[in-house]
Length: 239
Ligand SMILES: [Zn+2]
Image (cartoon, rainbow, N blue to C red):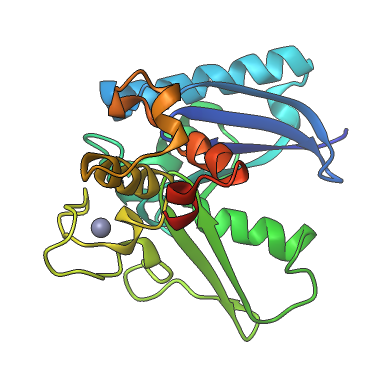
């Protein structure tokens, strides 16, 4: 019997899932809204339902699933299978993800931080193939990194190695959901750039973006800054 693997990417906006065959070819993929604000039980239930839907659509029996790997944002203990804390997920503290999923589905489940999961992908199939020392930087809504040193993934004593997004840059800087302020990720990220752009417009600077947002600064999105940059907008270039 052919065996399959499930991969899950838990994001702040969407939960993405895919079934792969043993050669890591994608059989079926899907995504649903995370609805993180409703709380961890709701998110876990949405994941369960999504996985059941995936299996159903792919016409694959649960008995032919070899294992499932999940990328989870925030601080976690991959050995105990517990998500310890996730700044963008309200109530997400000490959530036993692996136990919950293994009890429900019966196949082995593994979790790790979403950035390290990204790192494993690049190390195994992508830009890091064949290297023993790698730093992967993820620049999205937030900022993170994953590290391979001398052929070993670096976790750190508290599993927070590579959390460059929370490196303190400015003592009295922008407040961060981690409880600190002036974290690098509050500046170098999609969210950070958007905030910097708003601040500059509030200071009286001008940009082509103003024509796209009807004078409502809350409508500024990171992709607009990218578009304005491509058009040579001086403020976008500076930001
Ligand atoms: Zn922070």
